[in-house]
Length: 385
Image (cartoon, rainbow, N blue to C red; front, side):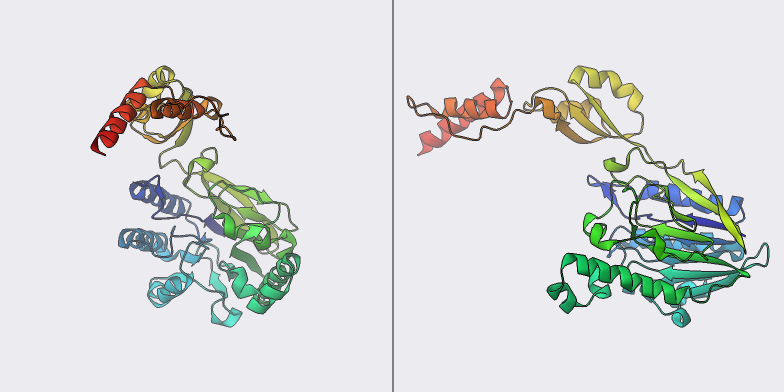
């Protein structure tokens, strides 16, 4: 059978205040097209459909429309909640989604109440068993009393054991004549961060070893880490990564979806299919003159700009005029002088203008217009008093 593994759509995510809903729609359209082109039997969406627990109506419309597009032609679609999603809201859609052939799982469930999904591949007639585990917060996995009384190491061990127990129960029904799959949204030890994950829910306390997954698994489809990677484990364990870089920390990531081919008794074969939609994120550096020379090559890319000149009034406006897609403009740290840690030694009394000029020096700002503006403001204030 053929499966498509995707995750971390983060629909509704903005970048430096810029909406990216149009890009997200293009990316999701491409994913639907890939699913149809390769005639997959099932699509596994491993969490973080949305970027926030309270997504806009437009974001919800896009996700619902995408899931329905994936479910056409009797394709099985299974999606779980990630740490950015609202689990109860995802579960609220279950009845409607189920009527459309889509399985949504917002909160961890027992095997008999939705924690295990079984289906028959439309192309081969093979059976598949999918153990699904949405994101599980540590505060729900470990009782509050234990969080207060135990050491951090004890709590980490307790979270690890809780997930082992849950997965052990959900995978107890794995069979030799079925394609056995696990889909989860979590952090696996030794996984490489993509650059845009929510750190508070990705740190060591939330990380589990890859040995948590049973060797009988033909494929483990993970979400949460935004970088495409395979995790060393006794069975195939993969993060497909985010299909669209959500911040500049992810600008060098490769955006893909994973096409998985599996049969009972045979480990899965995985092929990465590139996602080409969406605008590229790039960091550029240089003086204003050097940045002007880059303007034509920037194209549609969203830019983070490191200016290699001292700060001055109007510098950001100059850069944005040259590079309209510059969403973030910073002074290169090399041109930012450290602030003096101690006050200057006592001496002859200096005027406010001299003190202000000294302050500008500590900030590596050399702009006579700023000093003139300060002088006019100072004169106005002191004259009014």
